[in-house]
Every structure is written in structure tokens, then in C-alpha cells.
Length: 453
Image (spheres, rainbow, N blue to C red):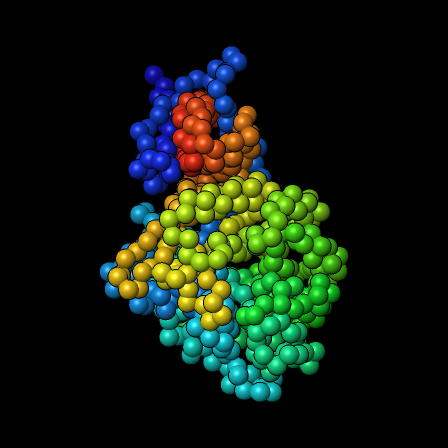
């Protein structure tokens, strides 16, 4: 007698006391050949697409100093909530910053000595105070399985046309080579601290003049910097394996930037792919079109958060995250990385008052850990879609069911179904191995996992 496959499901729902909660196991029935009046989601593992690098968030100085303000047991709880592979969100791909960003307690650079083109004064001592210890603790909890990429918000002030780290400005021509070597030194110093850098973005938001740490590159300037300075510097240092990621800004101009850089073969050969954010129009089709034009180059969501304060208790925040993850994956993105892993009760600290939300907020006055809807929604992807998974074909018969699915390296299938509507929707999940009917409650997300056949 053949045993029918068992489907395991986890659910988070606004109106139910369920937060990444397991549901009773469901037995798959043989596929029906009749016409169904229920909503249908097809998960076809015979058609596959891109390989997934992972999911995660960003280690910032703000996150690290907030963590240090919490009681020891709460610090451990927060790190396990993100990085524990069994009881947490199993994060595997994360970001950090080179020099300061807005989510630091002030401007700082590793080489502040004016005119030090030889980088003789280079030091990561500032990062050793809070940022590096947080990264090291997270890696230990994750068993070393966290890929880390780093992004600069600004070169040191003396390297810039405006003489400051904030408010835009551009990299001086005479500092380009020293700035390229700066990335190399950063990677080497972090390696000495036991932290491997998997990738680099050339510049965070290179078209934004911000009141905080920022630096502007035109498309041609980014192309030329990668081609003539950064790529060769990495290769000379034996770091050609480090992934170089261009753009690292919003989706609406993703194709425009990629076209300029990728049209130059000498620049393109150094570039692994393009990163993007969500802060303007969603325009998910721009992600697809960039893939279609350069299918050999990768696409990575490198930053997104809910702006304008902590938004404690908001359900829309989690839904915004889930919609973006689903749509980005379905348009060929290989990984999805949130912004700050942790912020305090104000949505900071931030040295220019640019307060935002995070999936976990820490009330540093009371020691309370405040889990937000975005934490649970992101967990529906990161816990069940593992690095090395392949996205597989999915279809949905209703506009208000948003779905993606992947086949994991162990052969298991994980499908994520988002219902942002105000109606519960009975839905039949159809796999090649059989089908099951479940209910998708209103304002909910569900992950269904089918074990290896």
C-alpha cells in the first residue's frame, strides 16, 4: 500500500492567534480531473527557474548598540529569533555598512586622516565596539552559514567633492584608486576578525543626495569605477571571488543603470549582479526586464523597511514585506535582505532622525522584545526556502492570492500563499504529487511544505 504524501503548513493571520503557527498535517489526495469551483494554486516542480541565495537583514551600528542595551537573556533571544535554524528565522544572507550610515550614532570612517591615500591610518576599531560582536555572535548561532555583503554610504569626507560624508557630493577623481583599495582593506580586516565578506555593493543609493551619509555616482561613473579601479583592485588582492553588486537603489531605475554598466564588457566582467530597494514605485516588471536583458547577471533585493517611525503593531508592514518578496522572487530575484535587524522603541538610533521600523523592536527602557508582523511574514520565507533552492512554477486562479514556491536542495517543496484581502478564501493546492484543500484566512500568510518524494 502506497502512503500518500503529507503536507505540513504554518500560518500567520491578523485575526487569529497564529504567528508562524503549525497547522494539523494534511494528506494529499489524488489529483482530480474535474472542474473546481474553489480557488486553485498550482505548484509545478517540473518547471524551475533561479537558484536562491537566501534571506536576511542588515547588521547596523544602530542594531548593535540597541542589542547591547538589552539584558543578556533578551540579547540571546533576539539573535536566536533571527539566526537559529530550528527555532528562529534561519537567516542566511545579511548586509552591513562600510563606514557609517544613517543608522549609526554619528558619522565615522575607517580612515579619517586627511590625504591618507596610502590608507596608513585605516582602522576598524569603531566596528569592534558593537557591530562586529553582533555579527560574530549571529554567525556562531547560525553555524557560520551567513553570507555577508557590505555597502558604503559615503567615502571619508576628505575623499569627496563636498568635504563631508553627508549631503551627497562625489568621489574625487584623485581618490578613486585609494577608495577601491579601501574596500580591499575592509575585507582583509574583517577576515582577520573571523568575518568573511561574500559581496560588496559599489555604493548605497548612488542617485540620492541625503541629509545623512551619501555619495552620488552617475551611471558612467559607477561603470568606470568598477572597470578601472574596484574590479582590478579586488583581483590583485586575490579577492576576485567577492561578488560585486551595482546600483543598490530603487527598482524604478534598475534597468537604466544596468544597461550602462553591462554594455561595457570590461566593466560587466567584474559584476555579479544588481541590487535594488523598494522606496519608490513597486514596478516589479523592471526586475523581470533587467533579467530578460541580462539573464547571466543576478538580481538581489538589498534593502527595504517601513519608513517614518517604528510603526509598532502595524499589520500592513508585514503584508508589504510579503508582497515584495513574492513579486521579487517571481521576477527572478535570488535573495531578499531587509534593512535593520533591530531598532529601539523610537525606531532608531539614527544620527539624523530618519527613524524607521524593524521586524524586531527592543524597548530599551523596559527590556521588552517587540515582535512585529514583518518578523513573522519574513519567517514564512526564510525558515522554509533554503539557500540553494530553485524557484518553481506557480499559478493562482484568483488575483487576491499571491504565491511563490521553491524546491529545496533536499527535494522538499515550499509554497507561500499571501491573502491581503478581507475575505477568507478556500483554496485547492495542486502539486504533481496530489492535492489538498485548505482555507486562506483574510489578511494571512501560509507556508505549505511537501517533504521529498
